[in-house]
Image 1 (cartoon, one colour):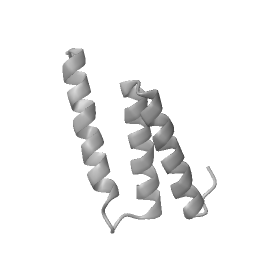
Image 2 (cartoon, one colour):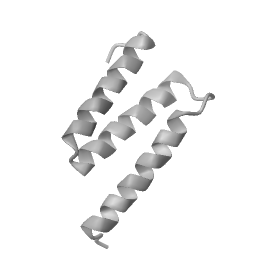
Image 3 (cartoon, one colour):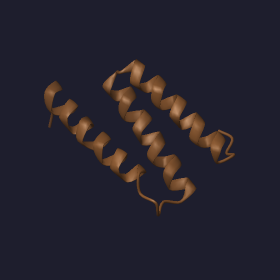
Length: 71
């Protein structure tokens, strides 16, 4: 089964929205928050959006520093 570029972009956009909503939950563990951030960065990479990926990388780095987690 293959997807058109438009369908693939729609699926990635939907997943990105779901991950953004998930990241706003207050009941996530640190590990879950980090995993959500990793998924968001991966989605941005799949979309090929370098500017957004850099922004997400910076956000992930700030989150990790704030939680005092080395990665």
